[in-house]
Length: 136
Image (cartoon, rainbow, N blue to C red; front, side, top):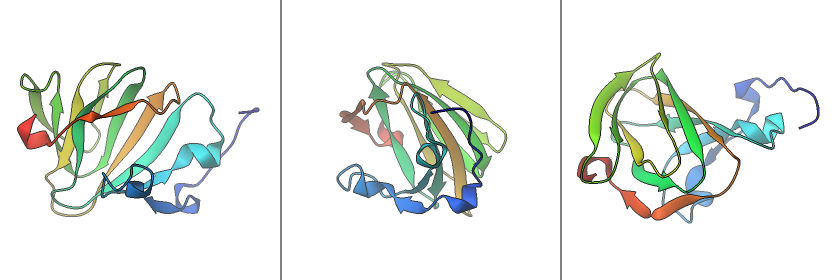
């Protein structure tokens, strides 16, 4: 990124994230980092319908920070089989470092949204570690 950029979220196209992950995920997102031109971080707004989830998984190198914009989510944090579960809602942050299992399921009634920021900007999601949030 050279300098700075200002982007209105509404100007970033909403896309099907399954297209990026070989159909493994049925969520929409706005990939804000493409519009911002960030090189070092991934920035997205994720959209959830009731029951949608980001499966429990790990990243090898990436640290992620999540902020609930709208709705209520169940989060599962820690090693699969030994997770801490919490219900979080609007205005709540949570974070997971490299090699730390994490996932969230939307338990609200209307559309939910999460702001997700990860760094470094590397494709290191370990899909072999994916486990449904309820089973993690």
